[in-house]
Structure formats: C-alpha cells, structure tokens
Image (tube, rainbow, N blue to C red; front, side):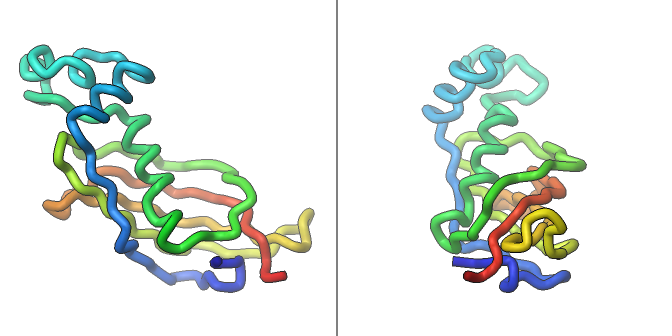
Length: 145
C-alpha cells in the first residue's frame, strides 16, 4: 500500500500492468455508454473519420482508472478533479495501454490532518508508444497510520 509519504514531487512511475482493448468490449461499452456508430458497428465505423472501430472516451478513462490499481494499491480517499484531460489518439481493438504517473505537487491537507493532497500528471501510451490520453489529476490520499 502506498501512502502520502511514499510520494515525492518529481517521482515518475510507469506501471507494468497494462490494459488490452478487445473488439467485443469496445462494442459492449459503446452500446451501454456511448452508442455512436464508430463504437458499436464495425461496418459503419469503416465509413467514419476513424476508418474503423474505436473505443469510447469513457472506456479509455475507465482503463486509466484501472491500470496500476492491483499492481501497486494506493491509500486513496477521493479524487478531487481532473484538469487538461485529453484524448489524443484513437484506441482500437488490440491496443495495449500502459500508464505513467508523475507527481506534480504534494502537500498535507489543511482540513484532514490524516491525509495529504497529491497532484499527478497521468499519461497513457499504446504499444506503438503513441500518447493516447493525458490528464492532470488531484486526489486525497491517507497518510501512514
């Protein structure tokens, strides 16, 4: 378990854990949360500006949240916000994403003495090393007991 004291400004971590997008899951998530033709219909997707099936942004964001959680659990309490969130490259069936996080700021909470506040830069790259997703995130994390 990582606690607030385990993070230092400038630290960067690339997780070994990755996430692979399958055609079936892209269609399933698209049907449930963003039923655009380029997320749910292979033939219609071929005629779109993407030239094929692509994952919904909600799916990519969910993968961002998932990668690294099991590998290196954090004593997170709550997210505070996301800034400059960008989807830069379409995610396609078979793409494998990996996450890198860099600590931008770390400070103790004024209102919760048992917690700190971290600001992080998070990036997702695919197997071709293309930047797919980027965001600055802030969250509350518990201090060591």
